[in-house]
Image 1 (cartoon, rainbow over the protein chains, first blue to last red):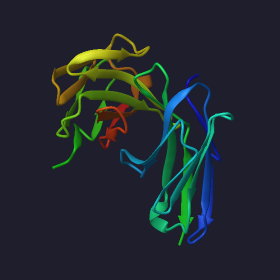
Image 2: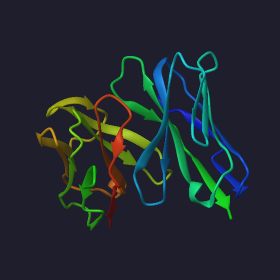
Image 3: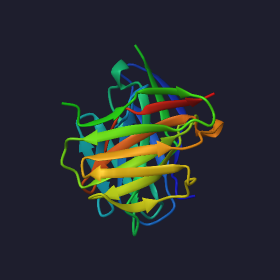
Image 4: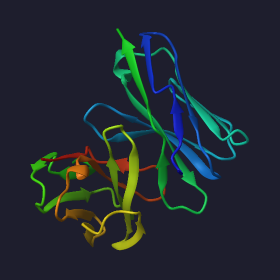
Length: 111
Length: 110
């Protein structure tokens, strides 16, 4: 399968704590992206990291990419109740004109 | 002023019926997609159109037929609906990446 895998499948933390989600994939990529999905809504793009980048920041988000291990992590710092959602990694794989999504991490931030 | 809009939001129908889902994007993007999200939240590409031309057609039953009348629209028609077609269908658009998604159509086949 070209689909990535994320862990954990579910994560529950207290407001103010940091949340870390991991993504592993199987093929060569051009870039890796993270999306958020609130319940009953579509996916919203959060951040894109190119294959030649190792770390990227956007506000409270920090993404790392290790192409040798074919893995990425998303760190959300100082979490808020509004961060409660499912988070998906997606890979733009070399030679494909499509995004392949991971299995998602369901994050719950308890106020 | 919604960027990617799809209708209807909910669709409940019986097995054997034919139904359509419509999608429109006002972002001027070149490429539009249909994704299927199953009950386990797996998202899988179904079709992709670039400037009205089909460029991706994954292993999807022939009962599913996309139609792109123009660059801003990509509709999905489903014939002879089956129980296994129940899922949430997402339309997306982009010129390259990232993609912009609609809010989904929850299809329930009874």
